[in-house]
Image 1 (cartoon, rainbow, N blue to C red):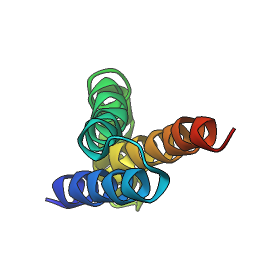
Image 2: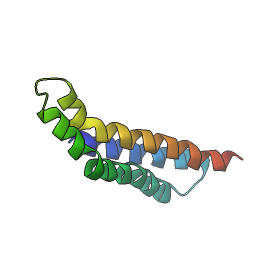
Image 3: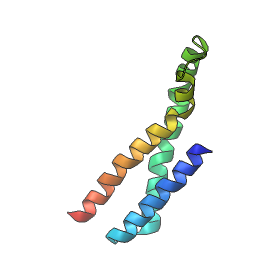
Length: 92
């Protein structure tokens, strides 16, 4: 649920930024969504299984919470970086 809400917020953020800079809002919103979704999927399929294995050997720590929600942080960081790269070109 938290990942879905984050995806919608990032998509909206890209849409509004595109409107403000005169870019195509729907295209930019789609780029924003994909710049969040693709890193989330890659993280979930490649990194999360190893982290879950490590948490199983040391239960009861906060690392379990990190493992469950790390993909959101990774996806959001990638989307933020992509946003600044994408909209930087419009100002040049």
